[in-house]
Image 1: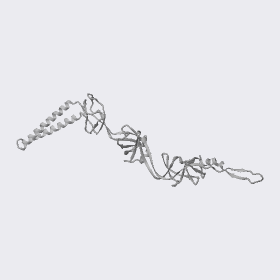
Image 2: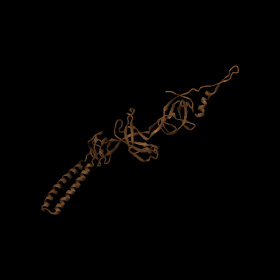
Image 3: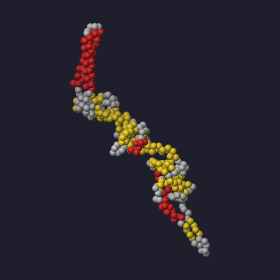
Image 4: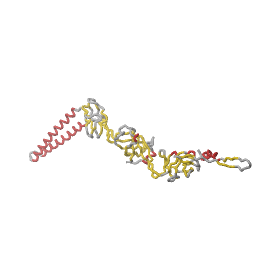
Length: 347
């Protein structure tokens, strides 16, 4: 609605009423009194306001790795079960390798014999009882047996599925007696003491995101209480997705109430903080004749005031010019106003 249309609504209230008087008395002209429009006002004052936005995210385990054996065979024993905690380097599963174990035992015996032979040869050599060659032969045999034993031990270790990280066993695929192939992933381990949330940051918000920036996580099951868990931005991609133009970001967090692997959460991120700014309700702002207008109550009259708008934040808007501290902003009834119309402030 334009200002002209607003004025036309009230113009009839200003038409003079003329009453003729008998006996040639002068005509008496009376003007109808305009009834003030009832309005509600809110004092204008500066305050701080955060410009924030919220994105959905899926909680993921920090690490998800698999373990396998490097020798094909039948599963001989499973030392752990799903849900068990496991340390890095701990054995989870072992396949049946009787021949490998025999070879390891044999090489171990040969190594011990070579150590004893070397000890005797060293004692005799120090007493000039054997030649240099005999001593060197004993030394060479000991080194060879050490190499053979290491190879046998390494080969034996390939028959075991060993956890590469500390975490929790999420899945064990084969059962005892089942044949597994070398390199086949058979165990899944997750690190659940630290979690991550992957986000897609809109292109327009990428400039406001920083490594280490604090964000708030709102799990759905506790959001009704207004609770939030603080976390931080651990990674921001340098390039955007060519299809969506969004940037990837990772939120680093820890398990907590409502924060677990597989949960969908909402992450609140701060763009900017506007300090000492004039902030008014969006519904108090009007668009008239292409201009941003508000009405200020001044000594019982509505004063039309043109303002400059900064950013829109939810149901609020930041005003960059046109307002002063202490102005009495009309927030209800403004749609019935035009400049200098009388108003009556109600509670």
